[in-house]
Figure 1 (tube, one colour):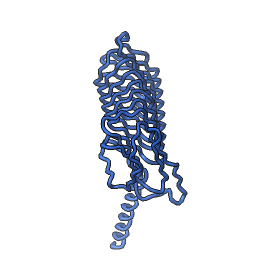
Figure 2 (cartoon, one colour):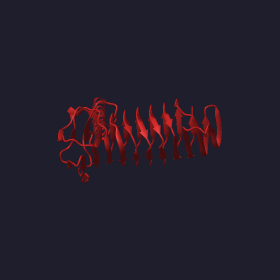
Figure 3 (cartoon, one colour):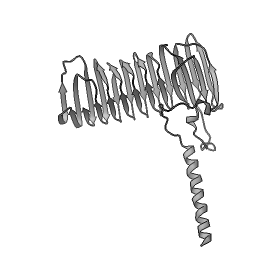
Length: 288
C-alpha cells in the first residue's frame, strides 16, 4: 500500500513538472495593453538618431512603436539572432535575419518569441511620414500619428492604439487586426485568416476585407463611404454613428436596427453622404 502511494506521488510530481515545462515552452498571447516589462529582458540600444520614416523587418521579434521622450531604438532578446539598424536620409531601417533551428533545439524552456522585442520610441508631438513594417509575429503602434502606413504580419496580430493614419494598408495572413481609440483616413484593412476588431475609432472612407473571420465595430464614427467585404464570417456594428447603411448576404441574415431579412439586402438612407456597406457571402450582417 505504501509503495503504491509512493509511486502515485512520484507520477503526480512528474506530471506537474512536465506540464510546467510545456507551459513555459509555449508562446503566450501578446497583450498590447499590458505594461512592457523592459527591465526583464536583455536590452541593447541600437540607435538614438532622429528619423521621420520607419522601415522594419523582423523574422522572430515583436515590434512595438510607441510615443516617448526621445528617439530610441532598443532590442530586447537573444543576441544570437542577427539584428541590424541604421538611419540614412531620415529613414530608420531595421532588419532581423531569419532564425533557423535545428531538430535538436526546437524545444526551449522559456517563452522564445515573447522574449524578443524591438521597441521604437518616437518623441511626443512628432508625425511620422511613413511606417513600413513586415513581421512574422506581433506589431503594435501606440500614440503615433503617421501619414502613410504599410503593415504586414505573417503569423501575428497587429494592434493599433491611440493613433491616426492618413492612408495606407494593414494586412495579416494569419492573425487579427485590433484598432482602438484611433482615426483612419482611406486605410485598407485586410485579413486572410483572422478577425478585425475596431473600437472607438473614426473611419473616413477606406475599406475592410476578410477571407475568413469576423468584423466587429463598437462606437465607430463613419465619414464618407466605408465598405466591409467578408467571404466567410459575420459583420457586426453596435453603438456607432451611422447615417446610411446597406447590408447584403448570400447565405445568412441581415439585421438593421429592428428590421430583419433572411439573405438578400437591407437598406437605409443610401443618399446620405456617410454610408457603410456590409457584405458577406457566408455570414450574418448586424447593425444595432
